[in-house]
Length: 459
Image 1 (cartoon, one colour):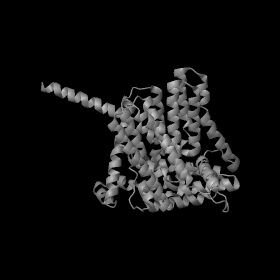
Image 2 (cartoon, rainbow, N blue to C red):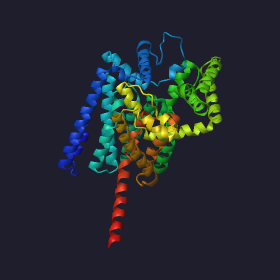
Image 3 (tube, one colour):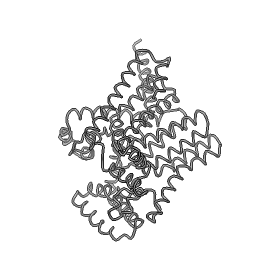
């Protein structure tokens, strides 16, 4: 972070006035994060979600029994819980508990990752030749973004995953700038660790191979293809560990877990109502009890989900569209309510599925200050989403950089599917932010053209 300040305040393009403004902004960032941290100390229950307890349980089991398991080892063993959570974040928590007897230091570690991520973002923008003022605005937006502040203070793996993806982009730009293979190796190590941080990255080794194939085509260095195998090796090794414990070769059970608990019921509910959805899930649960092992139950769940998705294809298509829109535009109402410890009877899906006349009634259930905040964040999200689309269609910069950014974003959209929410966007939010300077420049050039044509028309 000190490097950011040094480079910013000694930049010839930074006026004394703009430096002073950015200094005040950094002070506001510090106050905001300290306030959020203090709030978490006063109300520690707000730092925890259901996922948090599973991470902490896995960390405790690792410390006590040497095994990552997301449930209680005193209860009958559920093989699904061996692989429900990947090991990196529980390992980080276990280090904090082992050294300090408390997991609270994980929050301070996440704050460090956020600040280091700001430095990486600054360097990436410098690679793109962004002006100092523009880069300052983007980095400030990254630091002040509400979900960034909130998840820095929660026991969740989002910040760890975001940092690793951002670090991979940073080392990618370093490779493009210097050509040193060490940077490419660090990029792939980050991607391997990202898969171990959250299972949502388990399949990214496939688009990563495509990206490295493009790099090889541009550079003709065989080492590039070898380094591309590092994330795939991480996925294979953890899958083999799961096979040794469950006799089923797989990376994570989170996919079938979500299918069983959420996705199937959601599809049936949208088509036939909640009562029938509950009845169908209950009947399937009875059939699932006859599965001999995790492999058999996983295949049954996947087959049942595929059948349900095809039988309710309209709901399937609608849920994917809704999930994609929510992923890009969700202002994070759930995140705020979670951190404040509030309950809510309004969900984003309720607004999407409601008739137009019912939407005002739903919105009025949200406190006015929160509603105004969500509206402003929603506008910012719309601008950022539009910037990415413009970057996708019109940018003419380094094709390698563009390809990697687009691959990460589209991959996350594809795997999030119907479950797209604000916290899933957080992990690749920096990838969206790096497209905003291009969009801002595009809008400025368009405005100059319109103004110029208007001036000619008045002559």
